[in-house]
Structures are given as C-alpha cells and as structure tokens.
Length: 67
Image (cartoon, rainbow, N blue to C red; front, side):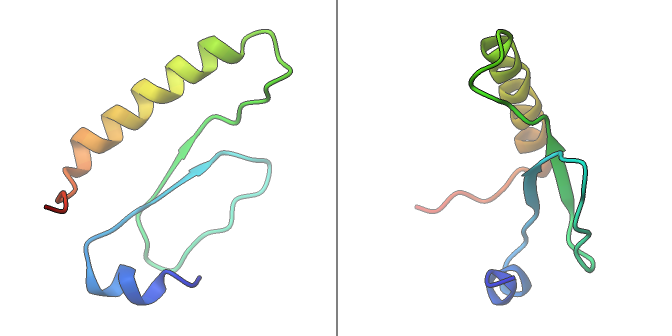
C-alpha cells in the first residue's frame, strides 16, 4: 500500500467498499461500507445509508482536521 508511510506517521484507518473478497491489512483499522451500483433501483437509498454509516465512523474516529 503506497499510503503505508503516511499511515505509520499519523493516526489513520481504511474505509473501503464491502466486496466478496476482503484484503486484510496488517494491523490497520479497516471499516467497510456497502457496495453501490448506479444501475440498481435502490441506489439513492443505499447512498443515504452509506452516508450515515460513514458519518458514524467519522464521529467514532474523530480524525484531526488540517487547518
């Protein structure tokens, strides 16, 4: 992973789509959100669900924001 040096330097986590295969990182905190296809009829509902899921992860992790 090319971000590894930055992830070692700063507190970080990985946010990815949940797929049939899941590449496990070595020691990285990993969160998964649902996969969305634009051609599905429920795309808007899934986008809203994923947005709330990401918001929950953001609140839980409390990342430091750059100034």
